[in-house]
Length: 266
Image: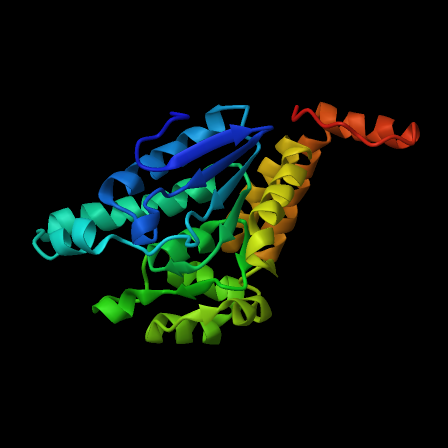
């Protein structure tokens, strides 16, 4: 994993990695290269100990305008079916990498958040928006299906089947207040407070029991496909494992001493 990526910005401080797409003049579109580099960065995340939370931030007043019209959309119209499937699998792999990275991800969304950008926000664990955020799943607007990068599986779980169907069929924009009412956003704040709010959320996560957070993220995603009985048993096993960690003992000892626990992630 590179801490100096070519196709996006990455800043790491105090256990929090802050990522930003870096083409603000174009409202931060994704390209073939940035898709692949982001996928690889998230895939490598479980193998490092210095990143305990991720903020996927905005840049220049916008989050992401989706796939670049000139760098992606145009070339796709000239590709073979085999090449197209390789591309759509790669974009889906970014979502799978974000879900499987074992580290909580906070999306900090300002301005435009559409197409694949809306998917990146959707695939994050927590989502904070400015009042200026406009989110749209635009795929039908360009002649495609709304079922892109896991949208038909994940979006209904966040905002409900009927609301997801409306956004995916029509491609219309969801404003920040509507998204908050529907549960897409965890919090909506003024633009000036967006970065601070997201960083504060990430810092609180980074200061927590990181092994426990990893297990929480794992179970949140695995339990989608479990029965209730399977989920309860899986959580029993996960919690028993967490009870063997030093952080669990630290929390107990701090409680007895009337002190705040200091977690170390082991």
